Length: 211
Length: 210
Image (cartoon, rainbow over all chains, first blue to last red; front, side, top):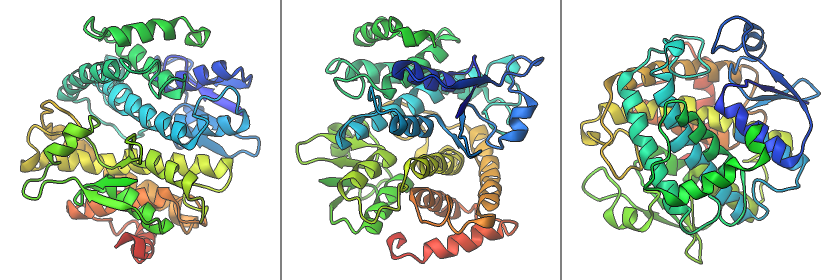
């Protein structure tokens, strides 16, 4: 089993944190392009038509892409400590909040970053061979969405220690990576969100945050 | 348990088809306004998630997001055990293809629909309590992405009966909801994608999709 990762990207970071929290030691291959900044290598894109990271290659040559699918597979192989919920209700809460963190947070940060970074001109979404022009209005929309995302999380964390409830999970990892991604464009947590700031300080102190 | 849907929207349809495939008898409530294309005020006041579908549990807790609802129901009603995958690897592949169908298909069509329809001015995305302006360039990008999704799906279905393999799964349901939404928006399956056309005819014949 081998994890293909890219050190600068937020989605592979979700899986690396997941592995660190579980204490799983597997081979991690960084697919950064040797010469071109902000690009994955040609070999990687030719080998895996999905063209995105992370990707888990299995020993039989099959592969699994998409972060939550990879994590769910690893959770089945390495159940302890549980990061995706122990009961059906916990599993559902993790998935609901992981998707909120991804769609409202990670994608919003992506809308800002991919539509403003010079290195991503013509690549406003990852995983496409074809040119996708940058859309400045989409970067503005992303910023608007991030503010709403911070407010949603702050409200949720007013009643719970973690996003899915009273237990740490993949949803927290995803939200933390999304906020880190937004930080690249200096769109940080506003001071009007004290619950989120408290949670974020706790996340930052976990050893897995360095993964 | 109650399932809140909106009859016009593609995401609740994913949960509705799933429930029908499983033969689960559950109360389904339409949260749409009778007159205007919007969710009813009582619904958005009650559920801050402001999106459909939502599954409300008997103790008042709720589960949002179609795949989370389906996974929860799968645990309660494991038979027949096909829709979410039968072993760890198949479960992962169903989730992967469900996400591809959602992200590259359903969201691409939504980008077209939400950013061009006059009734959705200021509501370029579902689920927000604030103004989200329409972005015409995003509609163009969505239309372009949808074309690429048709091609990708056509390639995937070249040697498979269903999206993941030999069993009908949630990934088929999501792809069907995306494509029917696209057909509604007059972005039909191109003739250059015969495998998608063959698959679409087959899955559309299932009683669950009516």
